[in-house]
Image (cartoon, rainbow, N blue to C red; front, side, top):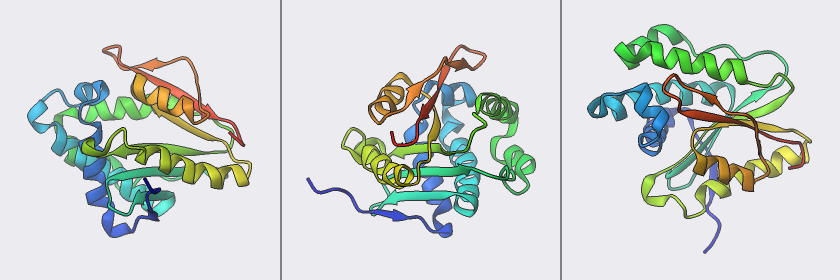
Length: 196
């Protein structure tokens, strides 16, 4: 099987890629806590991820397979701290409604556990459910890791499930002590040293 073609996403793709992340992440325990209403979950997640993907398209790097069935969303954490998304609080409330405080709490947990040394942050790695376990996520990781390794740059992410934690461990990430949502759902902070 040939390696997938990986392309840099365009700003006009923010919505469709946000929907892809929502589709992939909807079954996660963390997303069930964020939006307990299963009927509204995918719609709310898609709106929230649209904001975040749009932000990364402006300030970071969004890479996707040519068929748009997998996406990696990267933000550089080097030099000056990146600004938040434009009108973030207003847009968050419009997107998430009554669940906005849960999204704010998750943002606070991410911020409290984020490392301070220079690195690139993998905000999201998402693969469409019908293409999971086919190597697309690993291909996206290898593609970006090659670039990072050539520049001696470490990487960081927050793994939202034991399966994703184990995937990232196979790509050189080391898991730290998990932090948890109020219902006990864990996130593993994971660091990949420069050079893997």
